[in-house]
Each structure stands twice: as C-alpha cells, then as structure tokens.
Image (tube, rainbow, N blue to C red; front, side):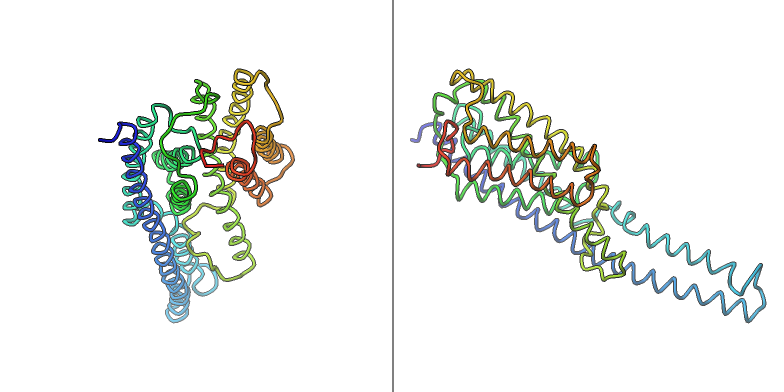
Length: 354
C-alpha cells in the first residue's frame, strides 16, 4: 500500500491531466464561438448593406413617380430616415450580438468552470500530499498559477463580459499545464530548509497572484495590438482580415482595462519584492544580495513601474503602452524559466535535477 503522500500525489497528477483536457475542450469551444460569431456578423453586415442600398433607391423612385416629395429634393424625407436606421442597426449589430448568450460561448464557460473545479482538486490534493502549500517548486508554481489565471478570468465574468478573452486565456492555461507536466514535473517532496517558513505562504502566494494578473494583461495587450492594426486598416479603407476581432472591444478599451489590472498586479509585485527582502533577511541575514533571482524580480518591478509611469504622465498610450506591458510579461517568463533553470544561486528551488 502506497503512503498517503504518494497516493495524494497520484490523485493530483490525475486531476491535473483531466483539468488540462477539460481546458483544451473549453479552448476549442471559445475558438469555435469566435469563428462562428465572426461568420454570422459578416452575414448580418452583408444583409444590412443590401438593405441600405435598396431603401436608398425605393424612396427616390416613389417620390419622382408620385410627386409625394416633401420639403426638398426627391426622396430626401424618407431616404435619410430609412438609411440611418439600417446603418445604426449595422453599427450596433456587434453589441447586440455580443449581448446574446451564444451557445458555443456558454458551453465554453461551463466547461471551463468544470475544468477549474477539477484543477482546484488537483492543487488541493498536491498540498495534502506534500503537507504544505503547493507552490514550493516550478511545477507547483506553474500549476497553481494556471489555476489562478482561469479562476480570475471566470470570476471576472460575473462583473463584465470578457468572454472574448476565453480563447487566449484558456490557450495560455493549457500551455502552462503542458509545460508543468512535461518540462517541470517534480514528485511530491519536502522543501529545503530555507523554504520551510511562513513567508513561503505570504511571499510566493502574492507572486503567483501577480503573475496571474500579468498573464491576463499580456493577453489583453496582444489583442490590443491586433485590434489597433485592424482599426487602422479599416480606417484606410482596407479589407478586414480579422473578422473575429469584432467581438473584442476597441483598442482603447482594451488598453484601459489592461492598465487597471496591471496597476493591481504591480502593487502585488511590489509586496512580492518587499516580502522577499524580509524573508531573505530572516533566512540569510541580509535584505539584498544581488542574487540573480532578486535582480530579475527587481527588473520586472522596474519595467512595470516604467509602464505605469509612462502611460500616466508621459502620454505613452496605444501600441507603445501595449508593447511595454508585453515586455514586462516577457521578463516574468524569463525570470521563471531561464533564471530558475540555468542560473545557480540561493533561489535555485526549481525542484529539477541539476
């Protein structure tokens, strides 16, 4: 009979596998919703355009034939009314359609909820098996981070319709789960002495939450760049090759939302840096030692501080702000992957064989 910690560890791995599969189904459903909605909205546009063209001609013929023109050139009274009504229906078509509970989107959200429940069971059983909080190595940090990314996304749907992010958020979650299982898998085990502290709960939990928020804003910034390019193309009279982006808010709305979330994430990362310094003093007798991990944690803080400052006071808006946000997240990825794996130091707690 296997010890309880190994049994819980096996249950955790099974839950993680089921969660990854469920997220994949949700990802496909969100992608299907984007494709289906884009196709339907295009058909609505074509129909509305035909209606506008037809209504623009009919009043003219009637006015000239019957002499019923009122107040001006032939058809002037009726043509603007009908045409404006049709155009307004077309312009509002995206919003009206987005307000409907699209079946693929509803299925995707339901499946994602099932997935996050299964994922939560995997995180809890990992904690029970290890007898501690489940973020003591890279495998646990990544799986817990993926759980928080999806959980925060689903909770945000209660207040705001962000289903347009579903494809990108669930896609990132699947990548994180696969990377954790294939590259960073670590069996259930005890922590090294330096990590056996209550500061692990405080410091790393805030770091995981902040990184999860930065993951969401990374997706928003990428969408902002796509939407900005699409808007410029349409303004120049080009062909809309990104029809699915019609379900996504305009670039300015994405930028504002990303900015607000990045502000919260930055506050969390500030506490991560502060509590890490306090923990370092408790563990090694100094607040700062220029360890590679410490340096890159500070680099991330500087990049996001620069992003917030440049956008708020220097007018760095639009694509420049989006690229700064993306640069910050790339620093987070570099800190988590390259620094943890290839740089030896006091923070070499990846759990991977050296």
